[in-house]
Amino acid sequence: MKDNLDVTEFNTVPEIGILNVKTHYNIRKQDVMFTFYNNKTNKEWNICYNELTKKWTTFYSWIPSYSENINNTFYSFDNNKVKEIILNYSTDPLLLWEHNKENNWCNWYNEQHPFEFEFIVADTPQVHKTFNNLQMIANKTKPESFHFEIVGEVYNFKDDKHNMYYRQERTK
Image (cartoon, rainbow, N blue to C red):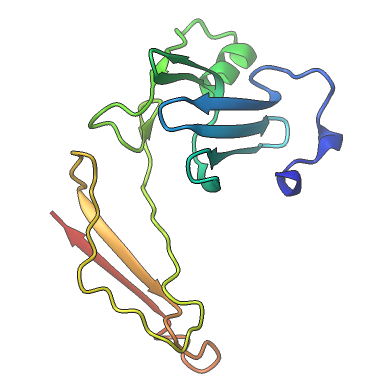
């Protein structure tokens, strides 16, 4: 986190919607999220640590200003909307967003985001790992398409740049 946070750009008093460091907790998933935004420099991030796995699990593409757990459900307010209200004196309502709703995966603040799953199949690139049956369970949400990439798969990067990247798409 210290690599992504320059304390010299942070005032001692946060400016909600403009400049802040905040911690959020999703009780259902046991995720601790650390968010930072500086709308003066257009720098923002939201990183997540999971207490169950005891690992950093993801960078989220959404930034909450405020959050709360109500009856074991995580709710938050979109920082972009808070910023718009503060900077433009907007009178649009600020909506409380319910996270982890069924059939609403990868959708935050009514904006659909892509889902990415990344893994390393071998520590040593000379050894191949073959998946005969890879299954992904999508929590009752059917994807519109499935994309996969194989990047640098045991290719000589110096001599074989054309073949080191492969992309495939499968729809429906």
